[in-house]
Amino acid sequence: MKGRPHGGSVSSMQTTYVMVKPDGVQRGLVGEIIGRFEAKGLQLVGLKGVVPSEEIARAHYAVHSERPFFEGLIKFVTSGPVVCMAWRGVEAIKVARGLIGPTNGRDAAPGTIRGDFGMDMGFNMIHGSDAEETAEFELNLWFPDGTMDWSCDSQKWVYES
Ligand code: DAT
Ligand code: MG
Image 1 (cartoon, rainbow, N blue to C red):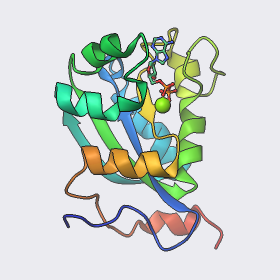
Image 2 (image 1 turned 180 degrees about the vertical axis):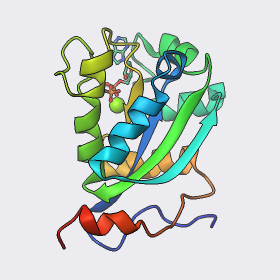
Image 3 (image 1 turned 180 degrees about the horizontal axis):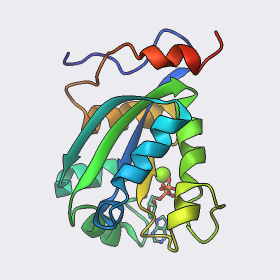
């Protein structure tokens, strides 16, 4: 499966990278978070737990390398296990970001993950890709062997056509 692209043939079908960060794992929110993505109707195509190396953390957050919070962010995200996920669906990137909510939990609306469980900017429990190029980069970074290609029977009750 190595090198298999993460995209799909339907133009609006996307796969996005989502990650429960160390605070979410420590707080026992993994099941709750996975449940929300499942219940929404997204398809789970990648799942693993890992304590991120400094190398992968720096690559993942490279876009923020010049920001003052960067070193703290790297220390935080390498401090313990994260749960890496790939979720597939129509406009999955936007849908996942909606489920997650804005960066600061205090600004996030109830009903979103950060709005329901977060009180902080740094400790916001979860990451989600913000664009197609970012998703491709992050999926290749965290799932270098590709994601799971499987037919989810319940999808025919998620989309009308
Ligand atoms: P998001 O995770 O909502 O996409 P981002 O990409 O702007 O947010 O930032 C990545 C992470 O960096 C974010 O989840 C938490 C941390 N972060 C962002 N801005 C911060 C700030 N001003 N102070 C501390 N941490 C920050
Ligand atoms: Mg981001």
